[in-house]
Length: 120
Image (cartoon, helix red, strand yellow):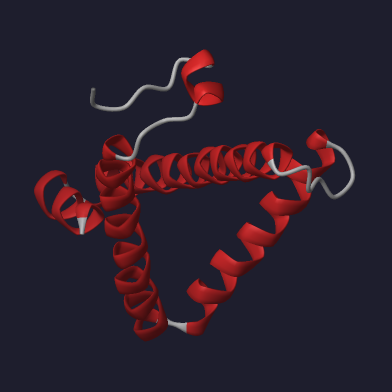
């Protein structure tokens, strides 16, 4: 990966320090992704009147569950991680297809009042 190339090109001193920064940056990125995912799920729950406790604590609960699931995939090993990546890719492709299909479906008057329009 990136650490291998950096350590071979610049030497172990620079490779180690850059690898440490790279690992920290990935940890921060995962934290931000989990918070974004949790906030999105809570917004969807609010639309359907399905909150667990309150919006702030729901973000925390969903975030903790997500981190535990991600940790479980990571601890299970690279084979499980590769399988999970394929499943997540399929979910991502379905979500992208859903965006295109959703733009063709006529929008309701309530959605139009909120600024959501489809192809006219």
